[in-house]
Image (cartoon, rainbow, N blue to C red; front, side, top):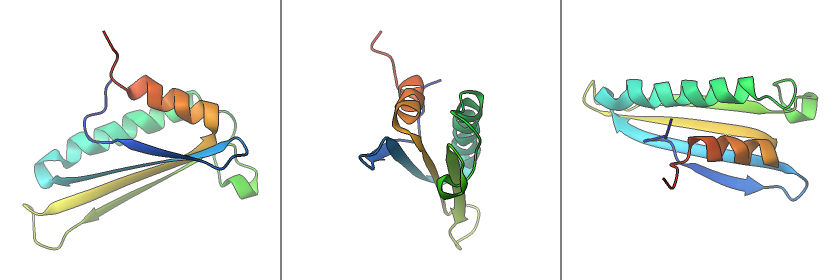
Length: 104
């Protein structure tokens, strides 16, 4: 599956842990598609988990935070979906590679 809405911006802490932030701001009609991408990413992350999910400072190997914020101007307004993943650098880069378009 190639992601159409979520584009991850990676950052490396220099000690083997990374953070991958993605954000999509869409109209109400596209929200289900964005949430399907979030679900697919989280399913992959859980299936390939490098250890238990939870805050790294509490012993977790990886974690994720999802936020959905709808604007106040009704059903035709914009909704912003953000997804942040943290975990081992190699794991996160494998996740991003899995969802990136192939060069075929």
